[in-house]
Image (cartoon, rainbow, N blue to C red; front, side):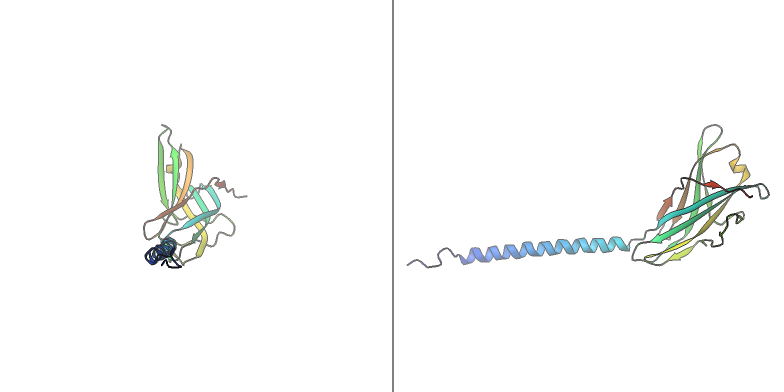
Length: 181
């Protein structure tokens, strides 16, 4: 006599249920892997600089050119970070049309004068930046007059280095000349 459940095969049903559970677990494992990767990516150190203002002034008394950049540097990650170094890279052409780049350390070397109003908040490097926060201030650079004699400046780039030697940069498009009135 044929069973009223003749279409029902217990072995195949168990195999099908096991397959469905495996697919379900695979989906959850894949989502967990994506979430873990996203969390790990948020822990990696990263700095995001932005430029607010950039000025320069030729100073005959000190001899050279003073640069001042108002910057904000954010730390969008879940880990604390810091700015270990801040440099200004100036790319220029010599009279012989040779392209050169000079890197200057912020707030170091010759003293850069405060020539912009409200330029009191100096960004003292090195500086610590907590997770999901930002720091803001002025970076000053002093370039000796001999370095800028008979050159054509092509570009500027502010480079921020964290303690892990990761670099973040911002390239000022326009650096405004500041004249004393």
